Image 1 (cartoon, rainbow, N blue to C red):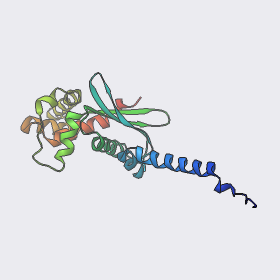
Image 2: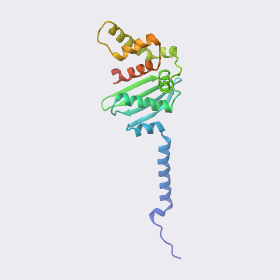
Image 3: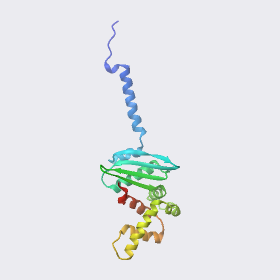
Length: 192
Protein backbone atom coordinates (compact mmCIF):
# COMPACT_ATOMS: atom_id res chain seq x y z
CA UNK A 1 0.00 0.00 0.00
CA UNK A 2 1.41 3.34 -1.07
CA UNK A 3 0.93 6.18 1.34
CA UNK A 4 -0.05 9.40 -0.40
CA UNK A 5 1.71 12.46 0.92
CA UNK A 6 -0.62 15.06 2.41
CA UNK A 7 -0.63 18.58 1.05
CA UNK A 8 0.67 21.21 3.48
CA UNK A 9 -2.83 22.52 4.17
CA UNK A 10 -4.04 19.02 5.12
CA UNK A 11 -1.60 18.68 8.01
CA UNK A 12 -3.25 18.62 11.44
CA UNK A 13 -1.01 21.29 12.90
CA UNK A 14 -1.82 23.71 10.04
CA UNK A 15 -5.56 23.23 10.57
CA UNK A 16 -5.12 23.76 14.32
CA UNK A 17 -3.26 27.03 13.73
CA UNK A 18 -6.03 28.31 11.44
CA UNK A 19 -8.68 27.40 14.01
CA UNK A 20 -6.77 29.20 16.79
CA UNK A 21 -6.25 32.29 14.61
CA UNK A 22 -9.93 32.29 13.63
CA UNK A 23 -11.03 32.02 17.26
CA UNK A 24 -8.65 34.81 18.29
CA UNK A 25 -10.08 37.10 15.62
CA UNK A 26 -13.67 36.31 16.63
CA UNK A 27 -12.89 36.68 20.34
CA UNK A 28 -11.09 39.98 19.72
CA UNK A 29 -14.10 41.37 17.88
CA UNK A 30 -16.71 40.08 20.31
CA UNK A 31 -14.59 40.89 23.34
CA UNK A 32 -14.49 44.62 22.63
CA UNK A 33 -17.28 46.95 23.54
CA UNK A 34 -20.02 47.51 20.99
CA UNK A 35 -19.85 51.21 21.83
CA UNK A 36 -16.13 51.25 21.16
CA UNK A 37 -16.90 49.63 17.81
CA UNK A 38 -19.56 52.29 17.25
CA UNK A 39 -17.01 55.05 17.82
CA UNK A 40 -14.68 53.40 15.32
CA UNK A 41 -17.54 53.09 12.81
CA UNK A 42 -18.01 56.87 13.19
CA UNK A 43 -14.40 57.31 12.09
CA UNK A 44 -12.76 57.80 15.48
CA UNK A 45 -9.57 55.97 16.36
CA UNK A 46 -10.25 54.56 19.82
CA UNK A 47 -7.10 53.98 21.84
CA UNK A 48 -8.84 52.80 25.03
CA UNK A 49 -12.43 52.24 26.16
CA UNK A 50 -13.41 50.85 29.54
CA UNK A 51 -14.08 51.53 33.20
CA UNK A 52 -12.33 51.26 36.53
CA UNK A 53 -13.07 51.74 40.20
CA UNK A 54 -10.86 53.70 42.55
CA UNK A 55 -11.70 54.40 46.20
CA UNK A 56 -15.28 53.34 45.64
CA UNK A 57 -15.84 55.71 42.71
CA UNK A 58 -16.52 54.21 39.30
CA UNK A 59 -15.27 55.94 36.16
CA UNK A 60 -15.93 55.10 32.52
CA UNK A 61 -13.31 56.38 30.10
CA UNK A 62 -12.30 56.50 26.49
CA UNK A 63 -9.15 57.80 24.87
CA UNK A 64 -9.36 58.72 21.19
CA UNK A 65 -7.12 60.35 18.65
CA UNK A 66 -8.25 63.84 17.68
CA UNK A 67 -10.54 63.96 14.68
CA UNK A 68 -12.60 66.88 13.44
CA UNK A 69 -15.02 68.83 15.60
CA UNK A 70 -13.97 68.61 19.26
CA UNK A 71 -17.47 69.19 20.68
CA UNK A 72 -18.96 66.44 18.51
CA UNK A 73 -16.15 64.04 19.30
CA UNK A 74 -16.40 64.52 23.06
CA UNK A 75 -20.22 64.30 23.07
CA UNK A 76 -20.12 61.14 20.94
CA UNK A 77 -17.61 59.69 23.40
CA UNK A 78 -19.79 60.63 26.39
CA UNK A 79 -22.91 59.12 24.82
CA UNK A 80 -21.02 55.92 23.98
CA UNK A 81 -19.64 55.67 27.50
CA UNK A 82 -23.08 56.22 29.03
CA UNK A 83 -24.54 53.54 26.74
CA UNK A 84 -21.97 51.04 27.96
CA UNK A 85 -21.71 52.19 31.59
CA UNK A 86 -24.94 53.92 32.71
CA UNK A 87 -24.28 53.49 36.44
CA UNK A 88 -20.81 54.99 36.90
CA UNK A 89 -20.01 58.11 38.92
CA UNK A 90 -17.88 59.93 36.35
CA UNK A 91 -17.30 59.92 32.61
CA UNK A 92 -13.93 60.76 31.12
CA UNK A 93 -13.12 61.45 27.48
CA UNK A 94 -9.54 62.13 26.43
CA UNK A 95 -8.74 63.43 22.96
CA UNK A 96 -5.12 62.92 22.06
CA UNK A 97 -3.34 65.14 19.55
CA UNK A 98 0.26 64.98 18.37
CA UNK A 99 1.52 67.58 20.82
CA UNK A 100 -1.11 67.58 23.58
CA UNK A 101 -3.93 65.74 25.25
CA UNK A 102 -7.31 67.19 26.17
CA UNK A 103 -9.18 65.62 29.08
CA UNK A 104 -12.86 66.08 29.86
CA UNK A 105 -14.54 64.84 33.04
CA UNK A 106 -18.31 64.98 33.44
CA UNK A 107 -20.03 63.91 36.63
CA UNK A 108 -22.62 61.15 36.15
CA UNK A 109 -25.10 63.14 38.24
CA UNK A 110 -25.07 65.73 35.43
CA UNK A 111 -24.66 63.52 32.35
CA UNK A 112 -27.38 60.96 33.14
CA UNK A 113 -30.34 63.34 33.48
CA UNK A 114 -29.08 65.41 30.55
CA UNK A 115 -29.02 62.42 28.18
CA UNK A 116 -32.28 60.99 29.53
CA UNK A 117 -33.88 64.43 29.26
CA UNK A 118 -33.22 64.51 25.53
CA UNK A 119 -36.00 61.95 25.08
CA UNK A 120 -38.06 62.33 28.27
CA UNK A 121 -39.40 65.71 29.36
CA UNK A 122 -40.25 64.33 32.80
CA UNK A 123 -36.77 63.16 33.79
CA UNK A 124 -36.00 63.62 37.48
CA UNK A 125 -33.25 66.14 38.16
CA UNK A 126 -31.80 66.24 41.67
CA UNK A 127 -30.77 69.89 41.87
CA UNK A 128 -29.21 69.53 45.31
CA UNK A 129 -26.87 66.73 44.20
CA UNK A 130 -26.00 68.58 41.01
CA UNK A 131 -25.07 71.70 42.97
CA UNK A 132 -22.58 69.62 44.98
CA UNK A 133 -20.61 68.57 41.87
CA UNK A 134 -17.38 70.24 40.84
CA UNK A 135 -18.73 70.56 37.28
CA UNK A 136 -21.64 72.67 38.51
CA UNK A 137 -19.56 74.79 40.89
CA UNK A 138 -17.00 75.53 38.17
CA UNK A 139 -19.72 76.40 35.65
CA UNK A 140 -21.64 78.58 38.12
CA UNK A 141 -18.63 80.82 38.81
CA UNK A 142 -18.13 81.55 35.11
CA UNK A 143 -21.85 81.77 34.25
CA UNK A 144 -22.49 84.25 37.06
CA UNK A 145 -19.48 86.33 36.01
CA UNK A 146 -20.76 86.47 32.40
CA UNK A 147 -24.26 87.37 33.62
CA UNK A 148 -22.83 90.24 35.70
CA UNK A 149 -20.84 91.49 32.69
CA UNK A 150 -24.05 91.52 30.67
CA UNK A 151 -25.88 93.44 33.39
CA UNK A 152 -23.11 96.08 33.38
CA UNK A 153 -23.21 96.37 29.58
CA UNK A 154 -19.79 94.83 28.93
CA UNK A 155 -18.68 92.10 26.57
CA UNK A 156 -19.96 88.74 27.74
CA UNK A 157 -20.51 85.13 26.73
CA UNK A 158 -24.11 85.04 25.53
CA UNK A 159 -24.65 81.34 26.27
CA UNK A 160 -23.28 81.43 29.81
CA UNK A 161 -25.05 84.66 30.73
CA UNK A 162 -28.35 83.41 29.33
CA UNK A 163 -28.00 80.07 31.09
CA UNK A 164 -27.31 81.75 34.40
CA UNK A 165 -30.35 83.98 34.00
CA UNK A 166 -32.44 80.90 33.20
CA UNK A 167 -31.04 79.19 36.29
CA UNK A 168 -32.19 82.06 38.50
CA UNK A 169 -35.66 81.99 36.93
CA UNK A 170 -36.45 78.30 36.53
CA UNK A 171 -33.76 76.32 38.37
CA UNK A 172 -31.78 73.43 36.95
CA UNK A 173 -33.21 71.79 33.85
CA UNK A 174 -31.72 69.96 30.86
CA UNK A 175 -30.79 73.30 29.26
CA UNK A 176 -28.65 74.16 32.28
CA UNK A 177 -27.12 70.66 32.26
CA UNK A 178 -26.26 71.15 28.59
CA UNK A 179 -24.60 74.46 29.40
CA UNK A 180 -22.55 72.83 32.17
CA UNK A 181 -21.40 69.99 29.89
CA UNK A 182 -20.48 72.23 26.96
CA UNK A 183 -18.72 74.68 29.27
CA UNK A 184 -16.47 71.77 30.33
CA UNK A 185 -15.90 70.75 26.70
CA UNK A 186 -15.09 74.33 25.63
CA UNK A 187 -12.70 74.93 28.53
CA UNK A 188 -9.25 75.75 27.13
CA UNK A 189 -7.71 74.53 30.39
CA UNK A 190 -8.79 70.97 29.53
CA UNK A 191 -5.78 70.66 27.23
CA UNK A 192 -2.21 70.22 28.40
